[in-house]
Amino acid sequence: MNAALRALNLSLDECVQRFPERIIRFAQPNYDAVGKETKELILESRKHSDRIFIQKREDHADIYLLRGDRILFYKDKLRQIDGRIVTGELLTNVWLDIPYQGIANEGDVVFPKSKKPEKLLQRVIDISTNPGDLVLDSFAGSGTTGAVAQKMGRRWIMVELGEHCHTHIIPRMKKVIDGEDKGGITEAVGWKGGGGFRYYRLAPSLLEKDKWGNWIINKEYNAAMLAAALCKLEGFIYAPSDAVYWQHGHSTERDFVYVTTQNLGHEQLQALSDEVGSDRSLLVLCSAFRGKPDQYPNLTVKKIPNAVLKKCEWGHDDYSLQVENLPKPPPKTGQMDLFGEDGE
Ligand SMILES: C[S@@+](CC[C@H](N)C(=O)[O-])C[C@H]1O[C@@H](n2cnc3c(N)ncnc32)[C@H](O)[C@@H]1O
Image (cartoon, rainbow, N blue to C red; front, side, top):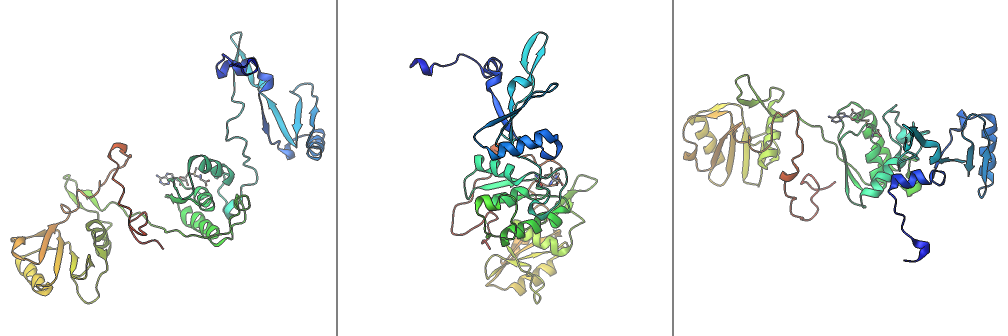
């Protein structure tokens, strides 16, 4: 190996301790908080971008400035513990150089204490995704992740349980899409607006256990919610008919679903079978039935909740992701979107 390219036989820690005066980072000084002399020096250093300015100080480390930024030396971060010089403090990590000052109005939403700079999310998304990838933020807050992902050409999913979903995230995303959000990284990435999003409200658990441990339908579900949920689970399109009481949804022009919490007897099932007729079929989801369901050739009769018990996990407090049991991705066909529906 060339002598000038010799490898240093040092760990990172040892290297930092050996050359602490050569390891630096830049930090934006808080202009409003520094003294008059430092302010003047900052302004001077901005004017002369090729020179380093020094302010000598008695009781503190000297201030070195380049282009208005402070140069911090790792030597000032070393500590002596039990007679040994140790790396007492992080000089920096890749995130801390992004200032939080001035982000209060990013996205036109105020979210004190929790909001992150768009620039920070830009870095995270930039190093971990490619355009078109999906970005998930399940603690969305004021919606910074979605706003930045949208501006960077990524798709995104955000989850938020707070009311600020309506007061912050939705208005913010609308502005991003309409090209009305001029702040954050808009200018840096040349964002002009575009795209769209869908908003879903998570329903309560469909099934819950009663005091004897039996699965029952959650009392928060009314008839329409129950029919819509069961259509989704059974693969039917929810489209309740005004004219025909048993048509809550359909899978084809001739295949329908009927959802009821009633206990159906033979007469009712026979009447249903007669109405459906021989050229149509009907899935009947009911709380209970009497008689033999296979005596009606055009009806399939199933009990709720048995019919849906295996379709989801119900009533957990913790739905921790089981990575080894991830469902297989759906086959790629046409323009299906993430939820298996046509995109808007
Ligand atoms: C620290 S804030 C996120 C701030 C965000 N990064 C931003 O820049 O605005 C965390 C958010 O997570 C939400 N949250 C907490 N637990 C949640 C849960 N189980 N499901 C969905 N959101 C949750 C809180 O309501 C809060 O808005």
